[in-house]
Length: 347
Image (cartoon, rainbow, N blue to C red; front, side, top):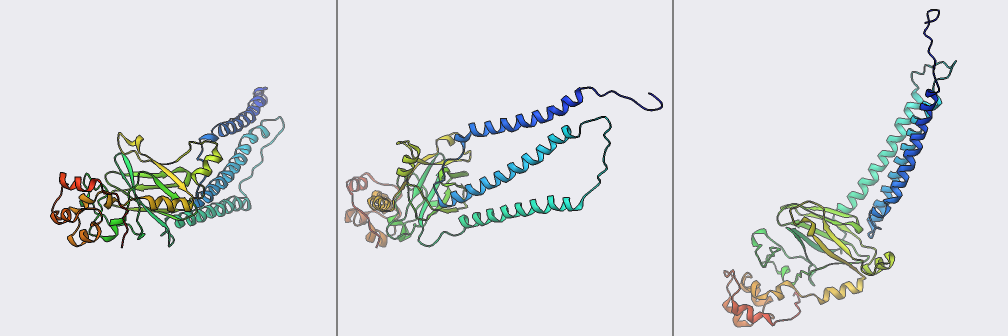
């Protein structure tokens, strides 16, 4: 203490520490950039749906705004310790408040964030609202541990279903009291038409699953007892995506993103996006589930509907001796229907 005052020598360490703030900031930004660039191939693939392009744009706009805000605020945070480091003769400046500055940094971010919320809500409402008229309707059902899909036939209407009708053969629980059920078909691949609206009707047979189509930016839970829906428009066919990626073996896929048990990893399903003409040709080549399982359906359908819809696929004597109360296919009925291979048309 000299003359009643403390005197302390500030060494070179003060300047070094202040300079290190700048070094840490620059190094951190560089590390972030390199990490970002090295992980680009891990990002979501190119969007192959109309709404996917819009949501991707919103994502990257938000990312750009937040990155800019992060860089500006942290640049100031790290630069100020260097700028205002201790210097002999410097005196502190008392700056209690500035209402104008506070209004600016409160109102402008609030307006920007509100804009993001409104735009995001608009997009979410669009894809979760009822699908436009004329959309292609496809039912997706999840179960441990596989996906199954069902398409309507020529009538364009999916038949009704009921969980009590599910058994080892009728895994969808299709209700054959509904005439719309007789031309539905269940393929082993999910085909989508390019450029046409597709409405997915999603449900689960056991536990919670989650429909995930990454290229189409589609993700919706499949919940037991609570059907969900999601509609979108595919914009890039499988053939076009193979050309874009340079991968002749590329395929879209449907995956489950809700851990649903030991076999969760195996819940993958092939997805093919066709040109409209190819899609219609593929649909026309499919046989109805009722025609392929006519003997079983004969044990479930009311007599009046059996006569109307199954006479093409089963001998009349087989239909006559099969009652609605029957629950199992007899060897004779299976033998009678095994050789039947006719296209079903819904009247």
